[in-house]
Image 1: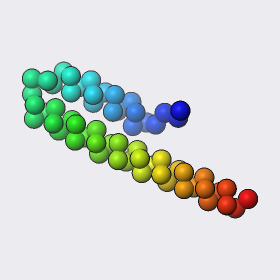
Image 2: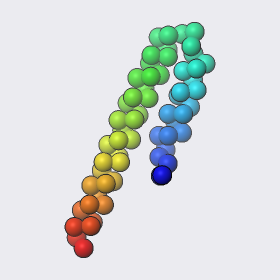
Image 3: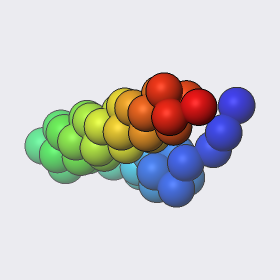
Image 4: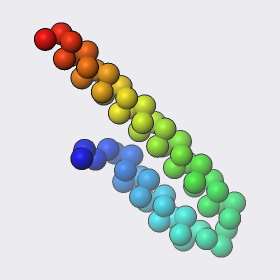
Length: 59
């Protein structure tokens, strides 16, 4: 499976959440950031699949 640049950032933020377990508000913000990054990643995957479908139709 292809790795995306966001994967490394998401993993890093998940590690930070563990380190910030004593600070629930900070952990909540990190969770929100991960959700936002995952949405961007999904949008990029969708756009990539759409481009592939369009290229396939051109054949």
